[in-house]
Length: 467
Image (cartoon, rainbow, N blue to C red; front, side, top):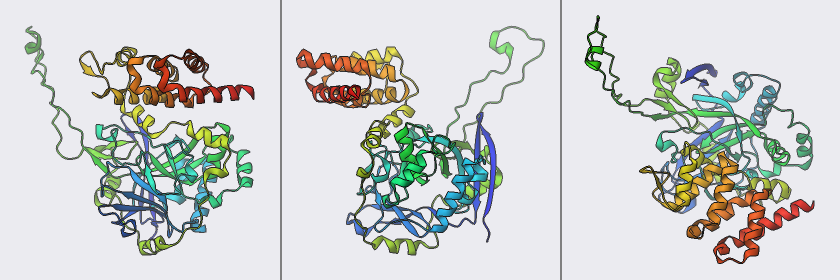
């Protein structure tokens, strides 16, 4: 059976969305569950694999069974060194097509044929080349550890909002990296319209299918890392439409006589069942789907084992060679990765719609409410953390001012250490330098908790200005 690929652009609340459906896909790229993994020796765990071709790439283990609210333990699969040359050639061809100017649907057509059957949203978005926790992504998955931001259901989705995933999972081992390839890539990244191709896996994280050397080069050159994104649409959602109280006619509304009665306005009916289907970045009402695409979602599975899953799982017993670490990259790349937004910051930015100066002032006064409403959270420390994350992601000037005001207030000392560590990423900011220099020189006891971070900041700032 040949692969059937269809694409269509639809309008969702004024936003154009590119949808691609796949029937009879080759099942060469995707994820699937292998259930409880006895190799882990932990009861109650559920393990999924990200695979390409016949090779397991990343092990993803949830210690809380199949809970979608928990972050995943993630690492490269044992024995992984690369994947089929055939798949590599398809990915390379798609990357070249996109950078020749082809549309997303035309350029990615070869990759669509490699996917599991389903409906996918396709768009472009900037990604941070980290694991979402300050570590450059390529060597961040050598050891099995919990990766914050990988839960499918976070406080954004649970509040009904959408978000764009923005952190990376590698699909090439670090043995693939060469300084020669990096030098060649550095010549081209400024001219490319697309730097990477990613496939969404879980939460804020997507697998980088193509563009690993480009991620290094873009980080080094401070170039936004723009990716073509493939995101499966499968999760149902429900939005309640509250009934609206309407009037029969204008006479009843204002007590005046009218020459002709106004017909009653239809009352919206509260919908039962699901409203539509979603991916992280888009929610699409049922009525907006093309009928054939909706049938694929309703009659298909969100995830399933490929026919060759036994070949894939058999490789899990392989013994992996010594892992190459991120130490092969320059300190410049690693330090820039540390300074990029992390999962907590991005989550806060999407979870909050806005923070007014009045609300920030209430937080600085030690209050969590404004005008009778909770500003962020009833927990003060949690409110400060979230506010800092939101401001750092959305408004750097207000972030700096808010952080300094916190660190200068002895009544907020419980948050001093966290805030001081958070502002370390802004090591070129003169206003912070002047504050930390004054605080360190004052000897005032109220600055005790920020002194370690202050000294680190001052050393970095002064070293940078001596260059």
